[in-house]
Image (tube, rainbow, N blue to C red):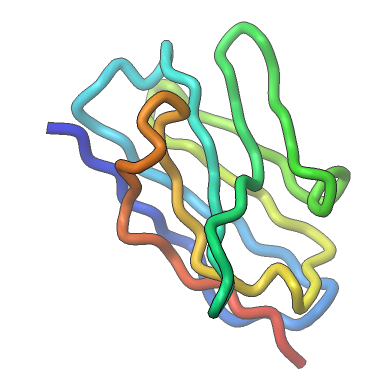
Length: 114
């Protein structure tokens, strides 16, 4: 059974940093392209970052240069390092396999506020 569990969210001031984690199980994590999404209140899902093994990492324009996606294959864990956070980054963040984007974890709340 595929399981994805996000963690690491919280309340942070504008300009601050957070690192999100996504613990994965039930599939060949090291060979699998992974993606981070987010959903702000009243908004749709927004793609944030994607990591493709052997090909590279990709980011939506609004987070480029501020967010970094990475993974630890030994721990089956995907990360999202978020720096220089802005109020508009506030959302619930989810991880998923790139090929199965409808199957997400429960998400982790990120709130950027002074």
